[in-house]
Image 1 (cartoon, rainbow, N blue to C red):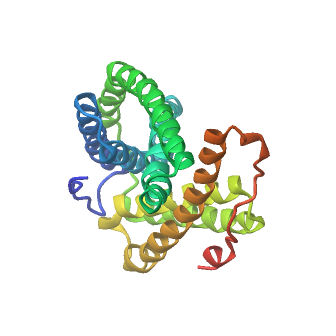
Image 2 (image 1 turned 30 degrees about the vertical axis):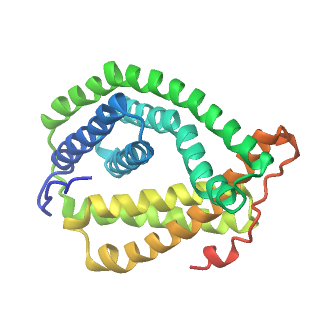
Length: 267
Protein backbone atom coordinates (compact mmCIF):
# COMPACT_ATOMS: atom_id res chain seq x y z
CA UNK A 1 0.00 0.00 0.00
CA UNK A 2 1.08 3.59 -0.58
CA UNK A 3 2.07 5.68 2.41
CA UNK A 4 -0.99 6.74 4.34
CA UNK A 5 -1.78 10.42 5.02
CA UNK A 6 -0.36 11.95 8.18
CA UNK A 7 -2.42 12.37 11.34
CA UNK A 8 -1.84 14.72 14.27
CA UNK A 9 -2.81 14.48 17.91
CA UNK A 10 -5.22 17.44 17.87
CA UNK A 11 -7.18 16.04 14.93
CA UNK A 12 -10.78 15.00 15.52
CA UNK A 13 -11.43 11.25 15.14
CA UNK A 14 -14.12 11.82 12.51
CA UNK A 15 -11.68 13.83 10.39
CA UNK A 16 -9.03 11.14 10.78
CA UNK A 17 -11.47 8.44 9.70
CA UNK A 18 -12.42 10.38 6.58
CA UNK A 19 -8.74 10.71 5.65
CA UNK A 20 -7.85 7.08 6.36
CA UNK A 21 -11.12 5.74 4.98
CA UNK A 22 -10.64 7.53 1.67
CA UNK A 23 -7.04 6.31 1.48
CA UNK A 24 -8.12 2.75 2.22
CA UNK A 25 -10.99 2.73 -0.27
CA UNK A 26 -8.69 3.98 -3.00
CA UNK A 27 -6.22 1.19 -2.18
CA UNK A 28 -8.99 -1.40 -2.42
CA UNK A 29 -10.28 0.12 -5.65
CA UNK A 30 -6.79 0.02 -7.15
CA UNK A 31 -6.51 -3.70 -6.40
CA UNK A 32 -9.96 -4.37 -7.82
CA UNK A 33 -9.00 -2.57 -11.01
CA UNK A 34 -5.91 -4.76 -11.35
CA UNK A 35 -7.91 -7.95 -10.81
CA UNK A 36 -10.41 -6.99 -13.49
CA UNK A 37 -7.61 -6.94 -16.07
CA UNK A 38 -5.39 -9.85 -15.02
CA UNK A 39 -5.23 -12.97 -12.90
CA UNK A 40 -2.16 -12.61 -10.69
CA UNK A 41 -1.64 -14.31 -7.33
CA UNK A 42 -0.15 -11.19 -5.79
CA UNK A 43 -3.14 -9.04 -6.76
CA UNK A 44 -5.49 -11.27 -4.78
CA UNK A 45 -3.14 -11.15 -1.81
CA UNK A 46 -2.75 -7.37 -1.94
CA UNK A 47 -6.52 -6.91 -2.20
CA UNK A 48 -6.99 -8.86 1.00
CA UNK A 49 -4.23 -6.88 2.72
CA UNK A 50 -5.85 -3.59 1.68
CA UNK A 51 -9.21 -4.80 2.98
CA UNK A 52 -7.67 -5.90 6.29
CA UNK A 53 -6.14 -2.46 6.79
CA UNK A 54 -9.46 -0.78 6.07
CA UNK A 55 -11.33 -3.14 8.39
CA UNK A 56 -8.89 -2.28 11.17
CA UNK A 57 -9.45 1.43 10.56
CA UNK A 58 -13.21 0.91 10.62
CA UNK A 59 -12.96 -0.92 13.93
CA UNK A 60 -10.63 1.67 15.45
CA UNK A 61 -13.02 4.52 14.68
CA UNK A 62 -16.19 2.56 15.37
CA UNK A 63 -17.25 4.68 18.39
CA UNK A 64 -17.48 7.84 16.27
CA UNK A 65 -19.38 6.24 13.39
CA UNK A 66 -23.14 5.96 13.30
CA UNK A 67 -24.55 2.50 13.88
CA UNK A 68 -25.80 2.14 10.31
CA UNK A 69 -22.56 3.41 8.79
CA UNK A 70 -20.43 1.15 10.96
CA UNK A 71 -22.59 -1.87 10.12
CA UNK A 72 -22.45 -1.09 6.39
CA UNK A 73 -18.65 -0.75 6.34
CA UNK A 74 -18.19 -3.85 8.47
CA UNK A 75 -20.53 -5.95 6.32
CA UNK A 76 -19.16 -4.76 2.97
CA UNK A 77 -15.51 -5.28 3.88
CA UNK A 78 -16.24 -8.64 5.48
CA UNK A 79 -18.03 -9.83 2.35
CA UNK A 80 -15.27 -8.61 0.04
CA UNK A 81 -12.60 -10.35 2.08
CA UNK A 82 -14.71 -13.50 2.09
CA UNK A 83 -15.12 -13.38 -1.69
CA UNK A 84 -11.35 -13.44 -2.21
CA UNK A 85 -10.60 -15.91 0.58
CA UNK A 86 -11.06 -19.24 -1.25
CA UNK A 87 -8.89 -18.16 -4.19
CA UNK A 88 -6.14 -17.02 -1.84
CA UNK A 89 -6.32 -20.35 0.01
CA UNK A 90 -5.89 -22.28 -3.24
CA UNK A 91 -3.01 -20.03 -4.32
CA UNK A 92 -1.10 -20.64 -1.09
CA UNK A 93 -1.87 -24.36 -1.11
CA UNK A 94 -0.72 -24.83 -4.69
CA UNK A 95 2.40 -22.67 -4.35
CA UNK A 96 3.60 -23.77 -0.92
CA UNK A 97 2.40 -27.37 -0.61
CA UNK A 98 1.77 -28.97 -3.98
CA UNK A 99 4.37 -27.23 -6.15
CA UNK A 100 7.37 -28.13 -3.92
CA UNK A 101 6.15 -31.73 -3.67
CA UNK A 102 5.70 -31.99 -7.43
CA UNK A 103 9.14 -30.51 -7.99
CA UNK A 104 10.64 -33.30 -5.89
CA UNK A 105 8.59 -35.98 -7.68
CA UNK A 106 7.66 -34.52 -11.07
CA UNK A 107 6.38 -37.79 -12.52
CA UNK A 108 4.20 -38.82 -9.61
CA UNK A 109 0.70 -39.40 -11.02
CA UNK A 110 -1.02 -38.79 -7.66
CA UNK A 111 0.65 -35.41 -7.19
CA UNK A 112 -0.06 -34.47 -10.78
CA UNK A 113 -3.74 -35.28 -10.30
CA UNK A 114 -3.84 -33.33 -7.04
CA UNK A 115 -2.38 -30.26 -8.73
CA UNK A 116 -4.85 -30.51 -11.59
CA UNK A 117 -7.76 -30.88 -9.16
CA UNK A 118 -6.61 -27.91 -7.07
CA UNK A 119 -6.12 -25.74 -10.15
CA UNK A 120 -9.58 -26.62 -11.46
CA UNK A 121 -11.18 -25.69 -8.16
CA UNK A 122 -9.18 -22.49 -8.07
CA UNK A 123 -10.51 -21.58 -11.54
CA UNK A 124 -14.08 -22.13 -10.38
CA UNK A 125 -13.59 -20.08 -7.20
CA UNK A 126 -11.84 -17.33 -9.16
CA UNK A 127 -14.82 -16.96 -11.50
CA UNK A 128 -17.16 -16.69 -8.51
CA UNK A 129 -14.83 -14.18 -6.84
CA UNK A 130 -14.71 -11.94 -9.89
CA UNK A 131 -18.49 -11.92 -10.20
CA UNK A 132 -18.85 -10.86 -6.57
CA UNK A 133 -16.10 -8.24 -6.69
CA UNK A 134 -17.54 -6.66 -9.83
CA UNK A 135 -20.85 -6.32 -7.98
CA UNK A 136 -19.22 -4.78 -4.90
CA UNK A 137 -17.44 -2.22 -7.05
CA UNK A 138 -20.70 -1.13 -8.66
CA UNK A 139 -22.83 -0.88 -5.54
CA UNK A 140 -21.49 -0.97 -1.97
CA UNK A 141 -18.15 0.79 -2.56
CA UNK A 142 -19.65 4.02 -3.99
CA UNK A 143 -21.95 4.12 -0.97
CA UNK A 144 -18.94 3.94 1.35
CA UNK A 145 -17.41 6.91 -0.45
CA UNK A 146 -20.64 8.83 0.09
CA UNK A 147 -20.56 7.94 3.78
CA UNK A 148 -17.26 9.79 4.05
CA UNK A 149 -18.87 12.98 2.75
CA UNK A 150 -21.48 12.88 5.50
CA UNK A 151 -18.97 11.94 8.20
CA UNK A 152 -16.77 14.89 7.19
CA UNK A 153 -19.52 17.28 8.27
CA UNK A 154 -19.76 15.82 11.77
CA UNK A 155 -17.90 17.39 14.69
CA UNK A 156 -16.91 16.41 18.21
CA UNK A 157 -14.78 17.76 21.01
CA UNK A 158 -12.61 14.65 21.29
CA UNK A 159 -9.13 14.52 19.80
CA UNK A 160 -6.92 11.68 18.62
CA UNK A 161 -4.52 12.31 21.50
CA UNK A 162 -6.83 10.50 23.91
CA UNK A 163 -8.99 8.54 21.49
CA UNK A 164 -6.28 6.55 19.71
CA UNK A 165 -4.43 5.08 22.74
CA UNK A 166 -7.74 4.15 24.33
CA UNK A 167 -8.79 2.14 21.29
CA UNK A 168 -5.43 0.37 21.11
CA UNK A 169 -5.63 -0.57 24.78
CA UNK A 170 -9.06 -2.08 24.21
CA UNK A 171 -7.86 -4.09 21.22
CA UNK A 172 -4.85 -5.29 23.19
CA UNK A 173 -7.04 -6.56 26.02
CA UNK A 174 -9.18 -8.38 23.48
CA UNK A 175 -6.15 -10.06 21.92
CA UNK A 176 -5.00 -11.22 25.35
CA UNK A 177 -8.41 -12.77 25.96
CA UNK A 178 -8.30 -14.48 22.58
CA UNK A 179 -4.82 -15.84 23.32
CA UNK A 180 -6.04 -17.45 26.54
CA UNK A 181 -8.94 -19.09 24.72
CA UNK A 182 -6.71 -20.28 21.86
CA UNK A 183 -4.54 -22.32 24.22
CA UNK A 184 -6.95 -25.21 23.69
CA UNK A 185 -5.47 -25.60 20.19
CA UNK A 186 -8.82 -25.48 18.39
CA UNK A 187 -8.44 -24.19 14.85
CA UNK A 188 -11.34 -21.76 15.13
CA UNK A 189 -9.96 -20.22 18.32
CA UNK A 190 -6.45 -19.84 16.89
CA UNK A 191 -7.93 -18.33 13.74
CA UNK A 192 -9.84 -15.75 15.79
CA UNK A 193 -6.63 -14.90 17.63
CA UNK A 194 -4.88 -14.41 14.31
CA UNK A 195 -7.64 -12.04 13.16
CA UNK A 196 -7.51 -10.08 16.42
CA UNK A 197 -3.73 -9.90 16.22
CA UNK A 198 -3.90 -8.52 12.68
CA UNK A 199 -6.55 -5.98 13.62
CA UNK A 200 -4.46 -4.67 16.50
CA UNK A 201 -1.33 -4.50 14.35
CA UNK A 202 -3.04 -2.66 11.50
CA UNK A 203 -4.82 -0.31 13.90
CA UNK A 204 -1.45 0.59 15.40
CA UNK A 205 -0.03 1.21 11.94
CA UNK A 206 -3.00 3.39 10.98
CA UNK A 207 -2.74 5.46 14.17
CA UNK A 208 1.04 5.39 14.39
CA UNK A 209 1.44 9.18 14.13
CA UNK A 210 -0.50 9.77 17.35
CA UNK A 211 0.52 6.78 19.48
CA UNK A 212 3.22 6.45 22.16
CA UNK A 213 6.43 4.71 21.13
CA UNK A 214 5.68 1.60 23.19
CA UNK A 215 2.80 0.83 20.82
CA UNK A 216 4.47 1.88 17.58
CA UNK A 217 7.67 -0.05 18.24
CA UNK A 218 7.70 -2.78 20.89
CA UNK A 219 4.10 -3.92 20.65
CA UNK A 220 3.98 -3.76 16.87
CA UNK A 221 7.20 -5.79 16.59
CA UNK A 222 5.72 -8.46 18.84
CA UNK A 223 2.50 -8.54 16.84
CA UNK A 224 4.35 -8.94 13.53
CA UNK A 225 6.29 -11.93 14.88
CA UNK A 226 3.18 -13.55 16.31
CA UNK A 227 1.20 -12.91 13.12
CA UNK A 228 3.80 -14.76 11.07
CA UNK A 229 3.81 -17.73 13.43
CA UNK A 230 0.02 -17.87 13.63
CA UNK A 231 -0.13 -17.63 9.85
CA UNK A 232 2.05 -20.72 9.53
CA UNK A 233 -0.27 -22.65 11.86
CA UNK A 234 -3.42 -21.64 10.00
CA UNK A 235 -1.85 -22.22 6.57
CA UNK A 236 -0.95 -25.73 7.68
CA UNK A 237 -4.53 -26.33 8.77
CA UNK A 238 -5.94 -24.91 5.52
CA UNK A 239 -3.54 -27.07 3.49
CA UNK A 240 -4.83 -30.18 5.25
CA UNK A 241 -8.42 -29.15 4.59
CA UNK A 242 -7.82 -28.48 0.90
CA UNK A 243 -5.84 -31.68 0.51
CA UNK A 244 -8.74 -33.58 2.06
CA UNK A 245 -11.18 -31.86 -0.31
CA UNK A 246 -9.08 -32.84 -3.32
CA UNK A 247 -8.92 -36.42 -2.07
CA UNK A 248 -12.62 -36.52 -1.23
CA UNK A 249 -12.13 -37.22 2.48
CA UNK A 250 -12.96 -33.86 4.08
CA UNK A 251 -15.30 -35.52 6.59
CA UNK A 252 -12.32 -37.25 8.21
CA UNK A 253 -10.81 -33.97 9.46
CA UNK A 254 -11.11 -32.82 13.07
CA UNK A 255 -10.91 -29.29 14.43
CA UNK A 256 -7.56 -29.45 16.25
CA UNK A 257 -4.47 -27.94 14.66
CA UNK A 258 -1.88 -30.41 13.34
CA UNK A 259 0.90 -28.56 15.18
CA UNK A 260 1.06 -27.56 18.85
CA UNK A 261 0.32 -23.81 19.08
CA UNK A 262 1.64 -23.34 22.62
CA UNK A 263 5.02 -21.92 21.64
CA UNK A 264 3.32 -19.31 19.47
CA UNK A 265 0.79 -18.37 22.14
CA UNK A 266 3.52 -17.78 24.71
CA UNK A 267 5.11 -15.07 22.55
